[in-house]
Image (cartoon, rainbow, N blue to C red; front, top):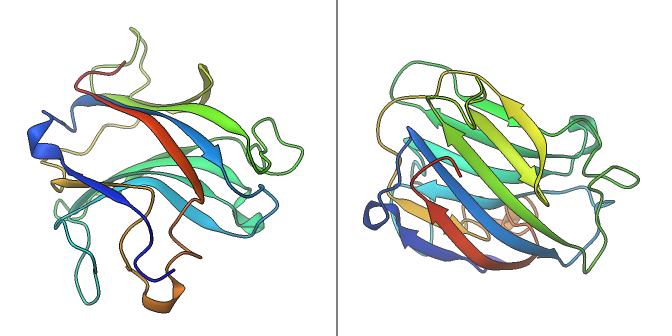
Length: 189
């Protein structure tokens, strides 16, 4: 499990902006939501590498994840954080336990969802919402915090991060499953 299975791409080639955009994909889970786990669907980093030991992995991060810890309410999350600007990071999450057993988006091995993580500093769909998570076309979470300014770290990892937690890799950072039909948009679609 050390190193994980991941795909990385350079965001500087995509026109990716903290002002507005969207990351859309289909995801098929390869375990069920009763697991005590946490994992990234995507997260960016400052380098495109196979190992992040002893390195600051984010300066300006964007990440989408599943939080599977019972104490955190088993939910889908979306956050942005520019660690260089002295402002707190921002984030949204689906309702507590909505992505756990018996929840609206609880999942079993083989469940497939369509996800869209959307942001727009001017508001999404003529609303005051600046961030949204969509699951199968339905708004699962939204927020209207001011988006951080700056430039995202350039490399987007899909599936996991490569070895950020040494021997804990695979337990704390990967959502086990299949990502398909990934689309990166330069506006809040």
